[in-house]
Every structure is written in structure tokens, then in C-alpha cells.
Image (cartoon, rainbow, N blue to C red; front, side, top):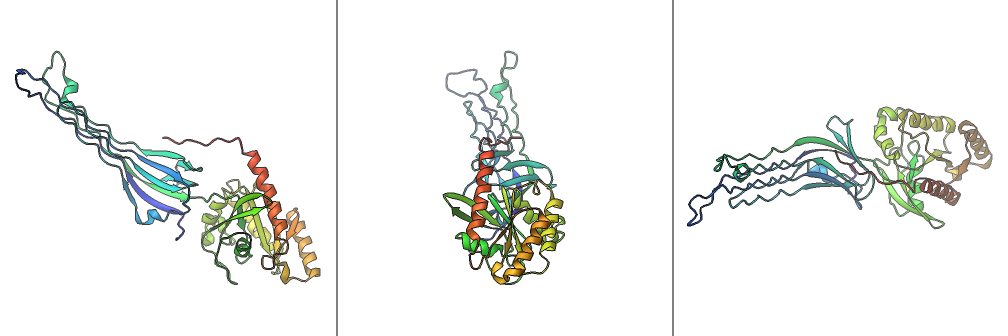
Length: 343
């Protein structure tokens, strides 16, 4: 299935049904009064976050969503049937914006979350509604209220516990393929990964989800290499795993490049817990590895873990560090309650 994390959709609610003008016509009733029924209510447009979806690809091919109109009223004071609602089923983590792409309508960050996007039009009153002692035979009825319509922007931010970041070809996909059942594309050239990949990891009775994000480059926070779209997915992650390619010469520059992009992007990304890992240790001799680790620790002010995604050396230590950080974050947010959205 192709990954799509943004879509533009036209939505329209249902119009209300018209009221009915009708009079009683039974035999032996000389002065039959008005008995026109009211029109039915138009359908609403809802968005609902559902599990087992991780892409917005459905809305690449279905870009117009319309609710049903209400039916008109009928004689014998029968109200028209209400129009059926339209429901946009989207992945958990989808944000809904106005057409300007900046005004947030709803943030569906948990399964089952629903947001009312448009209300259906109310049905018009039939002539029975207008009868009175002074107007015993009204011959008019109200039309139903018109439908509402607008264009919205859907943006998906993947829900994951750990976000993998680093320069292109840092070994992120190799790490994900080793620790989970995910099968990302792996090759020895930059930008092998073009779309985020998810994998479920289990270590010491702790399960968590890891998102492999495409490699970032300098200027990513401004959109270079679509970096701003990739960083958006890291916003939902509770822990950041920063992989640095130990086989390259400028590891400190590589670290500072990614660190600078994360800080420039904002949105609280720089404040998230991070695990810093020097990868590809199998390709470095021991003396050079010690120097590089010390230089990276000095530049970052953090402990640096060593790992080889190819040979598997140090992978368990990295996973345990991630599991500890994820567990700590879950305990901190265990009391949070989901938000219900309704305009």
C-alpha cells in the first residue's frame, strides 16, 4: 500500500428536506385542516480515527465526500426521513485543517476519536406547523436549510513511541529491519527510504512502536528534501533515537546538523528524550572508535551508545535504553484523558 500523509478533500453536508403543504381529505370530514409534515434533517459530516489504517491513500481517489439530503415532508403530518451521515475514516494521528492549511479543526490522536466537521441542514416546517386559531388553513411551508460545504486538509502524523532520525544512509532502515518484522528498503545510497516505516519492537516484556523516518538534510526544517513533512511525524513520538554514521569522517558535524534542524523546527521536538547512538561500529577500528565516541559525547553532552545494525553488536543495549525511556514516558502520561472535538 502506498504511503500518503496529506490529502485535500471537499466535503458537503446534506440539505434539509422541504416542508409539505397538504390538507386532510377524508370522507365525511367537511373542513379538513392542514396536515403537511416537516422535512427531514440533512446528514452531518464526521471524521473518525480508526485502527489498522496508516495512510490517507483512500482520499487520493475519493476527494469528494457528501452526506445525504433529508427527504421532504408528506401528508398526514409525516416527517421526512433524515439524511444519512457521511463519515471520513482516517488513521489515528490525523489532523484536520481548514483549506488554508493552518487553522486546526480537529486532532484525532486516539482510536475512536470523532470530530463533527459540518452540520446537516434542518428540515423545513410543513403547513401543519403554522396552523392557529386565526390561520386555520395555512398554505405555505418552509424550505429546508441548505447544505454546508468546504474544503479541508488532512495531515497524518504517525503515532509511534520512538522516532528514528539521522542523516541519509545512517543505518536507520537496517536497524528497524533487525529489531522488528518491518521490511524497509535497504541500500548503500542516500534517500533509500522515501516514506516513513513502522515496526513493532519487543524487549524485556516491553512492546513499543518505532518509526523509521526518511533521512534529513541541512535545511530540512524549511522543507529541504521534504524534511518538514518528515519531522512532522516525529512530533508524536515520545522518544527520539538519533543515529550517527560512525564510518563517516565528520561525525560531530553530522550530529550538529540534525540537532540544528530539530531545534529550528520547534514544536517541542528538541525537548523530547533522546538516545544518541554511534552506528556502524563494525566498520571502525577500536582506536578510531574510541576517539569518535569521545568527540561525539563532548559535542552532545550525552552518553553515546555504540551499535552495529549489520552485525547486531550493541543493539540490545540500545533497545533497553529505548524501552526504559518509553516506559518512563508512558507512566508520566498515563493519567491523560482523550480530547473530544466538536466545533
